Length: 89
Image 1 (tube, one colour):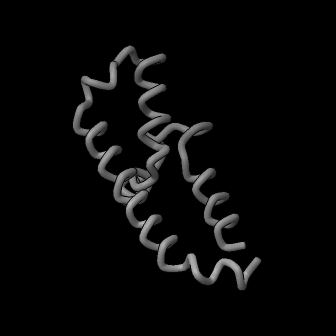
Image 2 (cartoon, rainbow, N blue to C red):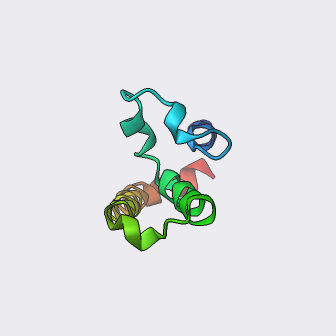
């Protein structure tokens, strides 16, 4: 149930239907923690602003580092909790 709630919050925190610029400066760093932010902004930059993803290489590197770290963290948690899956199911 907690995962469903977190996914719902993550969906609404991704700036798909609202622009990233409406956030106050204090909360912009929090929005950038969402890996989907970089995908959405990449499409927006390419299709609307005509800026290619290699022009913003820092954001590309940050996205991949953040995604890989989430993957590693998820793998560690999965391996740690794997023996308990049969009890829950």
